[in-house]
Length: 115
Length: 111
Image 1 (cartoon, rainbow over the protein chains, first blue to last red):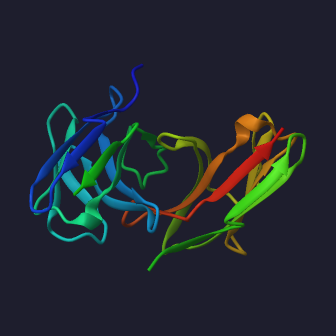
Image 2: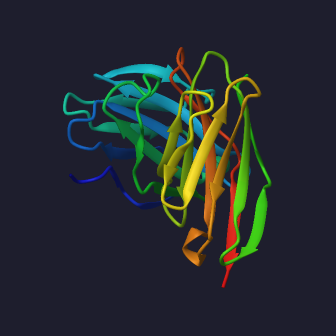
């Protein structure tokens, strides 16, 4: 089975712009979770989507949003980018909801640099 | 707020040494604790622990959870240079379904 894929792998944007990141889960997986990883804050949970619905949400501002399509692919959008949004954005997929004792498998991440 | 604390933050050992990494957690409605290994890319899953006192083992790696004392350890025996990585521990709750990660332990294994 192919693993979790994320596109693009690298991205450079300027402050004020918006960005959309994409994640394709492992075939058959219905849950996609998004995380932000920075040197200062570590790995932080953004949100989880399951069956096209946002099920869980972390403590991030409304500039961070996402959605999931019927084929379980998910997109994450960040509007009005700030310098502090520079990070590695990871998505992870699992068969069921992440809280239901499911193992999550991470994608390679998208490294976003905001100038 | 959920909290996961790992120690030590970094560790340097020589090949063949045994290391023990620690993870303590405060997670509301705790469901499971997970260990990941992160090299220069995304974290890769190592173990998921849900029951206290039951050791999970995979080759030279093993892990155990103590739900009474709220901690877990990850043990690596006969370390190799390929074990050099950041080891992340995450606590997962049931209600929110989200994982709270610790800051990680950076392990460096010297030849």
